[in-house]
Amino acid sequence: MISPRAIMTESALSVLSVMSLLSLGHLSESHEWTSPNQVEQPNHPRPHIIFIMTDDQGFNDIGYHNRDIHTPTLDKLAAEGVKLENYYIQPICTPSRSQFITGRYQIHTGLQHSIIRSRQPSCLPFDLRTLPQRLQDSGYSTHMVGKWHLGFYKRDCLPTRRGFHTYFGSLTGSVDYYTYKSCDGPGVCGYDLHEGERVAWDQGGRYSTHLYAQRVRKILAAHDPSSQPLFIFLSFQAVHTPLQSPREYIYPYRRMGNVFRRKYAGMVSAVDEAVRNVTYALRKYGYYKNSVIIFSTDNGGQPLFGGSNWPLRGRKGTYWEGGVRGIGFVHSPLLKRRRRVSKALVHITDWYPTLMGLAGGNVSQMEGLDGYDMWEAISDGKESPRLEILHNIDPLYNAARHGSLKNGFGIWNTAVQAAVRVGDWKLLTGNPGYGDWIPPQMLGNFPGSWWNLERHTERKKSLWLFNVADDPYERYDLAENRPDVVKQLLARLTFYNRTAVPVRYPSEDPRADPSRNGGAWGPWEGDGENWEAFYPRKRKIKKQKRKYCKIKSFFRRLNIRLMSNRI
Image (cartoon, rainbow, N blue to C red):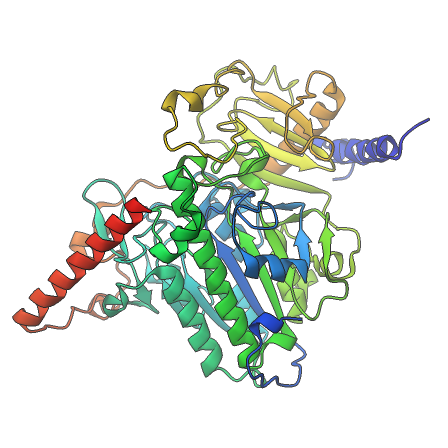
């Protein structure tokens, strides 16, 4: 007797066969716990949208996936909404953020290789209209708080020039959580906290997770929810390195043997509290009943620094499931079917058309999008319109030594790093990155050699095939057993590659050095504007007061380090 799974698989293969022919050219181409005195306003026809993104939070780093992590707020929001358990992001920061804000795969923005580094003269393509720009066109008030990491070499690259009415946060990829110091190589360091298009010299010293949540609450308090719909992109830098957190969040994890894991868990709990405060404000100021809250991580966790993707394979920076399968959920009173788990295939590019659909935009007229409107799949439980995901094609990544066009059946050069999913099948070529299965680290000291136990066991391979529906942990490579499926997915890579734009990964520009720009990171390529306005000098203070502040700051930092190490 044939099983339903077998029937589904054969149906998927039939669809695959047709798509393969096309690609080869053979055919035509309720929240009691956060309830203050509410002043709810009448529902606005267009909902208020709050998109919350965390940085480097692994699949195993949330309470409803792992009881060792305490996230009561996130757990409750997810339980009362829709958990996305077949949700995909990109393996590193810039790619995920660019795909969220443009609705396009990396191959269609030129950002298919690595991240945008602080000294690179690169940013989002200027000819693409971003999600917040479209939302502005639809009458939204748009605000961003937190990490940008989409380039800033020109003023036109800044968040306020790419669709946000206001911006408060850091432009680079990683900063100190208290001092906002960011380094791009030895000795190339600068201050990175900005208010709009100016350096926020006077805002440093507070833990960024708290600072960002407070700013969102101020935005909510100052806006009239009945007059104009609101879009807020809250982009936490947590839980990216450096591992820093106020000690009260680390203390509950004091029995964790691994120091990195302990500090990391504390940072996750700090994010959970920040989300609780934002949710409280949504209710207090009358937004909640007509709001959509979306939570997403930007990529997989980094086990070397406390993160965990267990039981998935791989880590941040890889195309294994541990690098690209993310935590995600939607919470909203507007959902028709709540309190459920969705297995609909969803990708981070899908938020652009989904949110534009909610905002009343005409998605059908937005050409070039790689995302799909997922609202009916999420809210009503209907089938996902998405059948496949191009994880990426990166022609600049280190070529696999044993890959070749011959190994790719003359269809695709398997030396090229690429990954694609079609139906239940996932294909990887080239060097997908570190491919071990890493349980949460419990030991205080972990021998460095252990990280290499399985890294080189498949040195001569350059092609893998998995049925991720039956084998979500990618333990059974079916490439040799199903050459028919391999050929069909290789054909899809060929099809996508025909639409790719050239990679944009320029050399570093020495003019970007903060020492040349008043000690702060910011635009350095001239555009005829007044740069003194961007790098205003710090206000002069009396010598005695400055000395006192320095001593006070020194002992505060020393106390944080001592207590953090003791915990």
